[in-house]
Length: 304
Ligand SMILES: CC(C)(COP(=O)(O)OP(=O)(O)OC[C@H]1O[C@@H](n2cnc3c(N)ncnc32)[C@H](O)[C@@H]1OP(=O)(O)O)[C@@H](O)C(=O)NCCC(=O)NCCS
Image 1 (cartoon, protein in one colour):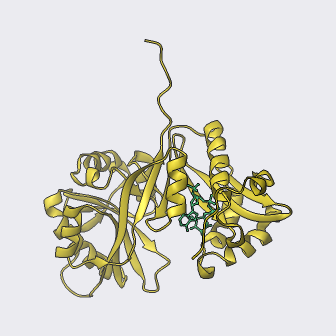
Image 2 (tube, rainbow, N blue to C red):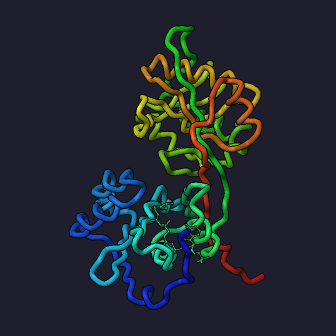
């Protein structure tokens, strides 16, 4: 069994974090080949991340070797996301990821404001420990559920939300019983955030936002590109809790009619939601869950 030495302070003293550069690309591609049996998504997003002028992409050098990386992403001025934390397997367990995370947080404190979050798997103990050490709180837990779709059946009850309806749609979403059950978070595409007008406007502009059964509910969708079967994903759902089973049945029908083989949702792990998923015929797709961690700086001290 692998042992995890206490922080290697001699090695840490030689670890240099800096802003990523285009010339780091070959080294990052080499590093990520060793992550998750070569299925890391970083090679796909790396060029976009390098070009992201609003966020901050960092690498960590040890000697002349790139051994790690991480990224700050700006979702909105006061809502940020931390992603892409990586350490080469040859250098794990020396405190390098902790150091990179701390470096990114120092940058965020200078660059950003509001709140910063990250997602990590329930089994990724190293990241849980880093979060605990750096003052992050676990605020949500999600896991994926899915259902194979069947063609035929009645027409699904979803109609596109028009741009001029955005405020009414947001009001409906904010008043939904489901929002607290979703930990007040929506899925922006592997990034979770508080619902707000700009996020809904983007979904509407992309043709991914729908009313359900008149104005009884709201649905935003995305496509899951990682799955072998073409699958449509719920990113944002709002309706009365008592209607959720019917909503989910309708969604599977809608996904089928839109040409998808699967209907899926990275859903909050909350008993009423899991019951509705079960009643609607959805099954668990993962044997782990996703934790969302959040960091909010303490309110500044005010003199009484
Ligand atoms: C997760 C990862 C970034 C950790 O990097 P690392 O440099 O080994 O992490 P650190 O050395 O800073 O360790 C952080 C803490 O976790 C502990 N730890 C490290 N690996 C661990 C493991 N597999 N199980 C339990 N604890 C572990 C360390 O002892 C340390 O805890 P401590 O400070 O309380 O002693 C690295 O393993 C990696 O890149 N994995 C693949 C990609 C990935 O999963 N990224 C995270 C996505 S959210």
